[in-house]
Structures are given as structure tokens and as C-alpha cells.
Image: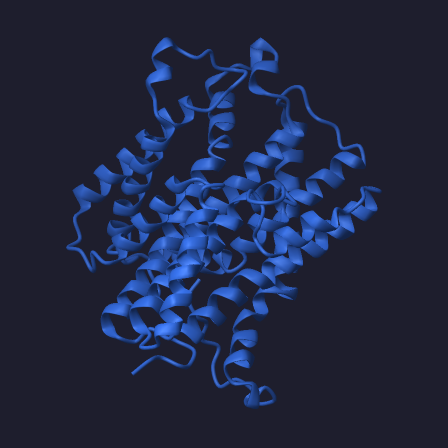
Length: 376
């Protein structure tokens, strides 16, 4: 029988923490780019291992987005495929879940862009804003904000998965034709986007189908080390003013490396979720990760415009790393987290309420019986 109500959210150990850390990494990288000069422009005396580590850690924002894609594939794509196998997929529920999940944080981020552009006396481009509202950035318009580039991918992942699910579950020929046409349009859209990201999303989805694995500490450590090692060649494929490209660098294929990175990370999360936190500290860390992950999507979408506003107000870009500049960097990061949480509280936190309203509009005045939330 198809599922119709709000589903109980299944908790996977450590994935919420990974999701927040990926969003925080993107924010940390953008903030570092705003507040500091490039590594190569620092005084030679500051080219220390510690400084190199800081700049390297805050340089892996693209890889953090790949982690998002794998996690999304695992949590959304994998669960959808599982429901197809079990015969419990419900298209209406899927559409409500995915639409509300995307739109509440997106609308809040677009409203903030409009407000902040007004504060900076920058004219809002209505075509860009409208295009971003319907996830056409990278296809027909530019992203309204740099982090928005990945959101169009995420939406089209959902559309493709929903169309596939509809095609295989409906008994209506008309609906199958519509689903097939949607798939044709979706794949036409990906002639403007990059298919490699769709492949990475499905890597996460099929990793979910591996099911519970036997806990293997050595395999977990091996995948963790391989995951870190996979970052190095990926970083070598990115242009940098600070690192001189070696001759062999031209033989690195970024698409292949990204696929490999996605595979390794998918295997890592399949292993990680087997390790239930045993100590009080570990349980607390896992619970903290869940609380932080609740607003990670808003953090990812909303953090960039305030950085532009800081620069507009004359916040200085530091040419060196010292106690004052590093403390300022930490304070800005903390401020962005608090700001993003406030935006989350106003919009994204209402996700389950809006879903409940759309599923059962007749009960919109009835207080919810529980605080259960659906999948990410």
C-alpha cells in the first residue's frame, strides 16, 4: 500500500555531522576568499605548514559539494529506489517532500539577496531571480549567488528520480508518456549541465541499496584514508595562482577523479553508519551533528550575500595572517552561522508544518501530534 502520511525519519549515524561539515567547508572557503589574499600573495615568512594547511582545508569547497551530491543520492535517491522495490512509493508524497524541502530555504535566500542588493544599491535582475527560483541557473540564467550553481543540479536530480519512479509505478499510459517526456527534457537539460554530477548522485543512491554492512573497522579506516588521499589529485586539477602546475598534471582527468571520489565517499558513509556512537562524547557529537545539519541547507544558500555586504561596508582584506585577522575570520564565521540559523528558524524550520498542511489541508488548524520530520 502506498505511503501517504509523514514518515518517521530514519537516523543514520554521523551523516548529519558530515552534511553540516560540508556546508561549513563551503562557507569557510568563501569567507577566507573574501577576508584574505591568496596564499601566494602572503609574505614569504608566512608560507608555513600551518598556513598552507589552513588555505588547503578551506580550498575544498568543490569537493564538499560532491559530498552533498553523494549524501543526497543516498538519502533521497536510495530511499526512493527502495520504496520502488517495496511497492510503497507515492508520487504525490515525493513531490510535496522534495518541493517544500527545496523551496523554503530557496525563497528565503532569494529574499535576502534582494534585500542585500538593495542595501548595496545593486539593481536586482528579475530574470536571474526568476530563473533561479525555477532552478534554471547554469541552463538559461546565471546563479543569483555563487552557491546556487549546485541547486539546479539537485532539483533536476529530484525531477529525474521522480519521473523514473512514476514511469515504473503508474498504470496510466498517459502518465507514463508524461514521465518519459520529462525524462527527455531532463536529459536535454543536462546537455547544459555536467552529467558527471548526475552519475555521482546515483552512486550515492545505489550505495544505499547495499543495505546494512558488517562493521569492519579496518575497511572503514582504509576508505577514510583513501577519501583523504583522493582529495589531492582533485585539487591538482584546479587552477591556482599559488601552485605551479607540473607537467604530468595534464594527464589528470577531473571527471574521472570526481567519479572515483564519489565512489570512495559512498563506501565511506556505508561503513560510517555502522558505527553507533558508544561513548557519551560520541553520542553527544552525533546529536550535535543532527542539530547543526538541520540548518545546513540554509547555511549553504544564505551565507554568501552577507560577505558581499561586509566588503561593501569596507571590511578590510588582510594581506597577512596574524592574531587579529584570524580572530576576525573566526568571528565572521560565527556570525554567519548565527545569521543562517536565524534565517532557518524563520523559514526552513517550518518544512514539516508546510508538508503536513499540503498533505492534509483539512487538518491545517489541528495541532501536530508529534515533531517527526521527513527525510533530508
